[in-house]
Each structure stands twice: as C-alpha cells, then as structure tokens.
Image (tube, rainbow, N blue to C red; front, side, top):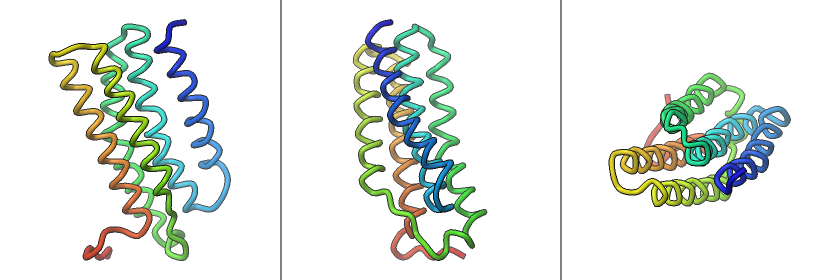
Length: 150
C-alpha cells in the first residue's frame, strides 16, 4: 500500500462514513445534505486511487461524479421541496471543509501528474467538484439572494 492509497482509505473512511451515517439517519434535510457531501468524499478518493494504482480510468469516474453529484442533489432537493420547506439545512462549515479537501487533493494529484492534458482534466474536475458542491449546498440552505424558486 502506497501513500496515495492510504490517503484515499483515510479519506473514504472518515468522509464516506460520515456521509453514509448522515444519509441513513435524521430528517430529510439532513439526508439531502449528506447526499451532497458524499460527492465531496468520494470524488477526491477516486483521484487519489487513480494516482495510487496508476489507473487513469478512475479519473473519468471522478469527472462523472463531479458532474452528476451536485445535479443529483438539486434534483432531490426539488423532489423533496415540500419536506424541506419547514427546515432549511445548513452545512456551511462542512461545505467549505470539503471544498478545501478537494482543492488539496486536486493540487497534490496535479503536481504528481505533471503538466499536460491529464493535469488540465484534473483541474477541471476540481473546479466542477468545488463549484458544484458549493452551489448545491447554497441552494439547499435557502437559495441565492434575488432568486426565487417557483
């Protein structure tokens, strides 16, 4: 086991277990936030495993997860809008912690990969992951100022 695989194991063990626990217990609002945080836990782990095992296909899975994870959160939020009306989940600290972890993982894997197309792909994944999760988390907590849901 190398350092990349160890880091992925620790990251999935901590972040994945917390997200799984949040998704299986609590109110619907807490479950939707946990579903959003699952993307933040699993996508960086896929990038670490890609580097650790030398499998570039894991990067493609991370790209797919970075694209579809926040979209899935917004779909769930829309479908559960009646259940979420009474309470607005807030995970500001958790969201920014996950964004920081994602940025650190993308930076480390990018540095190990070196310049080229693979590095550009990693940077795009990082931008999609961070922006998507921040936007989805913000939408869950009440939306954006001046934008009304309907």
